[in-house]
Length: 559
Image (cartoon, rainbow, N blue to C red; front, side, top):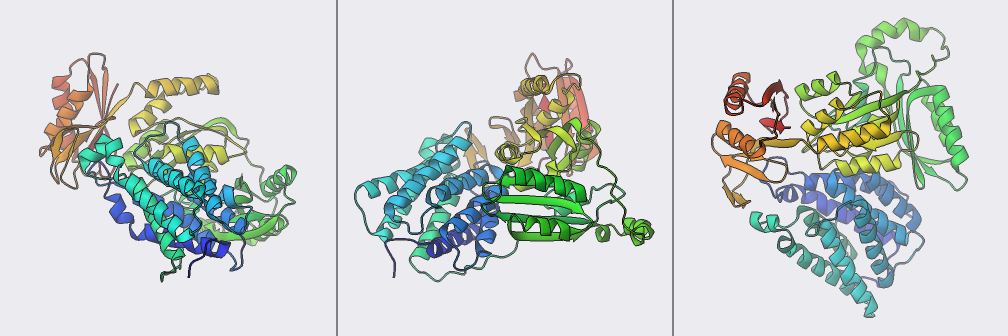
């Protein structure tokens, strides 16, 4: 039997049901990608974002109140946010929970207020909001909620039913707002994901039988997704053996002085410290020889959750052997940490060849990621810990990672993070090349921003379905040359498709063509492409380098 108000227990069930429903539909949502490329990841990104929050919600005590529930939803989704769709979803949840956290019973006016606050928060997080997306679907749902609340509706079941029905209608209209959706014959994938969350929540409200069990996060294989990925790049000598991570659910006595004291204490017992405050929680990461000391200190500030301790020495058996005699000796004071350098670089990259290029250019740390592997906000914050610098330039190198990087920069309190909004690997390489140590941080930021605007990027991959985009008929398994603004060439001959893509990118001002060939391309085929381009563009320098990137046979830049 349904009710006309909602308490924390019901809202918790609705949220978990929404998360589970999204998870069950993620592969289908991935396939709604406008471009028929083999890397659609909207469903995956939104699922990983909401599941980060769902795990925190499922860990709450059964009688947890609304404030605790809201904190778990907001903090969990914020740290787990990945991809543009995931970041927007986290902001919707953040706004929604902020509106209701002080209430224990929610009526229809409260829900309408929360929907509106969710939309307001999400729109503010996006620099250039685009209609026909998840934002439009959220706004449509909020407008319907307000209409019903102002009309005096008192039946909560009818309220949810009509809001959901209207959200589905708005979703069906997204192709009319974004022509590229209409031409591809799909609705917006992010909007579809949001509707699935709302649909699952409505089922829970109706009392349908739902499995609310939330499984633990699967260990991701890519470097950078977990702290252990970073440990693999540790220095040969491990001074502090235990990688310790946990979240402090803060009590009311915690203030800025406590935060500074806690950071200073962590520095006295270890290194590789991340201490990021987010409203009522603090995410903590430290390498130490005595995790108990960090835990005891943290307990003075609140309750702990998500505790994780890894023995890094056991993960590096060869180093353990070399250090065994040293470990048997009495513990001595740790050597003082090296002072941070003024500026460092953090880049998101994929492909062993591309990774080596970034390292050779002076990038301090690489997060393995890109299409299909968008690092989360928490992943980026963890990676920042690996760069011992006062100011760190972050190169997302993918348009779907920029929002998560910006969110990380907002959350970081003890380092200056500057996001250079690079959308492609070539833009990231150009940004690093144009860094001049003698210039100020501000001048370098301005120079890099200007120079990445001069880079055109094209990428060659294959189609996973039949469709029509940009008036080009595409068949499954066709090769496609995709430029910064759309598809430039299509065909069944990879070399020809690549040449046509480059032709569409080169103009009279072009001076340099850089080719990065992927893991599925033979070197002799890449050499042949280079020779063909040298014949066609004698006025341009042609550079060929092994990138090793998956999915994309060629990534080519023109400057």
